[in-house]
Image (cartoon, one colour):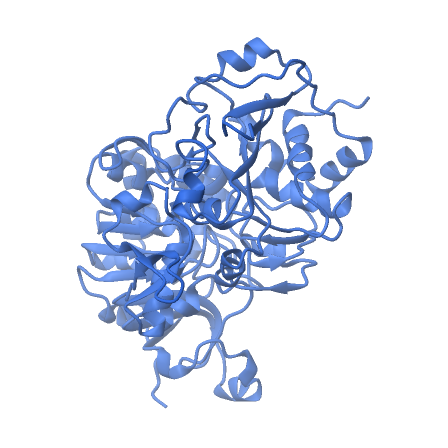
Length: 281
Length: 259
């Protein structure tokens, strides 16, 4: 087995400008935030972001000017309201928004993971999403004639997820809600897993039933404790509501957002320094 | 009678929509439906299967979390299944009820959570419809909640159909082969609304205590069907209120009413 451990910079050698990038987690839970901040420091742009229901991770990348297109069913900050950069960029026509519904993101990624060009599904007809998608086509069931929706596969160039634990070869123990994390890893061409903790290989072998993603589906493993901050990571920490509120407030204006970016991303050398800046342990 | 807030009344109204033994799903950023599901399970619908967007089944959290995908909802749950599996069940016709929000809603119960104005150059880009376009089609029925009943929300025609109501009227859902029955109820800060069997147009079912018919008409940009005698929404029981307050000590239910 090949060792996959690297740092955030090293992992980002897998990401190129223009890539389709899928990010794990949902809302403000288990988003790969440390890696997102590193993408901004490295200025890897022209990205096409893919996810189900996303928040601050997408909003940061959009605000940093690194995003060309967004495919998602929701981009917002839940009780803190709009994801302001997403909203501004969409209203100014600076990004293309391909609004999905949760079920179609899942079908598209599942098709990618299954090695199929599309998946049939029910629903969506009658909704105006049908008018904005070239990748949704009406088909009829070859057996019954039933009207079905064909959703074209999404094959991300890179998928990034944040998990609780992995060994140095990339055997991942993902706990709690999986969201679409395992599906997007299986669908993607290149796969990065950031983790709270790298554990000895022997611990993986002692409990193989806990491995949710095996090593041969992972290209890079990065240990970043509190790497989902300010989003939550099940069994490790909750979401940091104070920080989320600070972000929501500052990002309401472009100037405020630049200040946030400078304070918490650009002037910060690495993840360790970020953690010292946001406080806590 | 104990005083109660509109949020508390709405949570109780939403919980009344849940039948015992039904399979119910509640989505992201849905504090009132989350509370309604927890309440229903502790009162009239202990046999309801409650699934939320943290992927937990039958959550029994210590307190209502702010994020409805929060892992705090794993507390007390019997299991965790990925959303894609819940959606598989929905396609089989095994999801009875989904709660969804709306930034705009029209007389046929079509909802918009996507954009105000033109899709490609929107006046307001909203966060997006989450599961609406899929679940409004396949879930057996949809219940919509609106915390600010106003003419800008209750519109003649939605700018974008995110969630399918009865589309342009009777028969259209059937033509398109949508398996779900469509919107069943709309619960707002002013009252509870349903849909006329024949015309599929929105009708008043009850108005909350203190709300006048005139007030509802002023805040609705289309003509509502009004019954000859407009019932009053039943207030929460002491037991329901006590449970709501115990389950939500931090007042997450009030957030949308504070701004």
